[in-house]
Amino acid sequence: MNPKLSQLLGSIDVVRRQLREDSPVSSLITDSRRVVPGALFFAIGGLRTDGNLFVEEAVDRGAVAVITEEDLGQHFPIDYVQVVDVRKALSLVSRQFYDAPDAKLGITGITGTNGKTTVSMLTQHLIGGQDVVGLLGTIRYDLGKRTLPSFRTTPESVDVYALLSQMVANGCREAVMEVSSHGVDQMRTYGVEVDVAAFLNLTQDHIDYHKSMESYYEVKKRLFTGETGRCPRAAVINVDCSYGRRLLTELPAGVDVTTFGIEAEDALVRAEEVSLLPDGTEFRLTWPEGQARVTSPLLGRYNASNLLAALAIARAKGHGIESILKRVASFPGVPGRMERIDEGQNFNVLVDYAHTDDAVVHACSMLREITSGRLIVILGCGGDRDRSKRAPMLRAALDGADEVFVTSDNPRTESIEQIFADMREAAGSEAAHYVNDRKHAISLALDLAQTGDCVLIAGKGHETYQEFDGTVIPFDDRHVARDLIRMKDFC
Ligand SMILES: CC(=O)N[C@H]1[C@@H](OP(=O)(O)OP(=O)(O)OC[C@H]2O[C@@H](n3ccc(=O)[nH]c3=O)[C@H](O)[C@@H]2O)O[C@H](CO)[C@@H](O)[C@@H]1O[C@H](C)C(=O)N[C@@H](C)C(=O)N[C@H](CCC(=O)O)C(=O)O
Ligand SMILES: Nc1ncnc2c1ncn2[C@@H]1O[C@H](COP(=O)(O)OP(=O)(O)OP(=O)(O)O)[C@@H](O)[C@H]1O
Image (cartoon, rainbow, N blue to C red; front, side, top):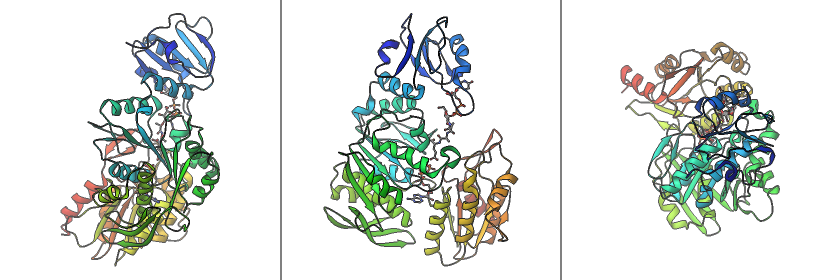
């Protein structure tokens, strides 16, 4: 039995309601092109266009009502509700429509510039595994019995609640969510009852959207302060990061805090004696319950930090040290994160999702430590996204590697030459190889590699496409590298 519109309005801030029919609502839709008879249409003012321009289309397609921030007037042909904030209304109505699935799940929300996917998948593994712990993230949505490919790191609120309700129906009692800053800002997680919120780090990214690091931080902070509708029960915070330290002082009273860190001596959960090995990472874990040796196949110092984050979250959720540690070593890794391409060649090839300058710095310094020969990096920058990170990303690669190939990485509607020009600002007279075609760039880099060298193909990780001016073509760094290595017969 579909609920009537009036039953869905709950606690939303209403300016005016014009309910003549108060019809049952069969679906919640934000895109007029997807409206079907019985739908409730939310007219959202966006960055590119305004959903209010399409209310007539929604009516023509059979919507029973509209929720909007506009006054549509008393002659508007169907029911409508004028609200203060349509995105907030979308979240709250969705929660009501799907019967508050978040309240039936212990939800962990993970935010930070880098590492969200890694920590989310690690946490899922440590606290029970893919079959019983739901996951919403950049790579996939695990819903208990089934898995869908992800279409957004943090989907629109109506999808968040729909997916959480499927997890509940499939028997999950826990869920882990990556919470992107776009997601928080656009209220995609508004109202979600978060049990544990984790803060990993904050470095430059998405400045095109947030305008400054300060407002980027302020948006992430909302996950911890109740500004997303509810305060989390517990917070897990990286105190190696200065923004994490600051967050610690700005938390509301009553939130149970667990700090973690490698450098920070006052961290509750700490890694000491970190060893970076060619095939993994080892460290001594110290936390209030004691100490233990942790060995993981994940590469690099930043993954020691990611491991600590997941261990601290599992602890905050009440899991005992024995059961957590047993599962650490069996974590299969994250697709496209330092994924090794091994066709028997006599040099290392790794595909990694590093697409911020901080991630490139960490990736290069980590690979340096485990590479006897030269480090060769291939990278590009996405079009229609944060231009200010382009020069720093190339700078990081030039500083960290011996040879750098600059190439395409989803130029979208921008010209590759323009993206190269932005990146080149960092290069000065230093030489990088500029090769428009990504496959050709990978091929040239592989030709250059000799015994003991390492080739890092950065930026796309698990992605399986490139986007050129609205045309999406299949492209997977891992398949391309494998095919080239076999063809060139390096083995
Ligand atoms: C920059 C950004 O976040 N944009 C989001 C924003 O888009 P927008 O403001 O441009 O929307 P718009 O195109 O102006 O449309 C406004 C409204 O009109 C509606 N419309 C539009 C056309 C029409 O014919 N009929 C109609 O009803 C649209 O459905 C929409 O509701 O609102 C849309 C609807 O809520 C989102 O889908 C869209 O995400 C876009 C697709 C996106 O790419 N977002 C990325 C940047 C993002 O969110 N990424 C983060 C991860 C970031 C990271 O950490 O790497 C993520 O969580 O995935
Ligand atoms: N803790 C970390 N600190 C710095 N860099 C990291 C960290 N963890 C991962 N990285 C780098 O960032 C890349 C992306 O990692 P991951 O996918 O886990 O992060 P993410 O936050 O989910 O990214 P996105 O939001 O862009 O999808 C990795 O491939 C690696 O190069």
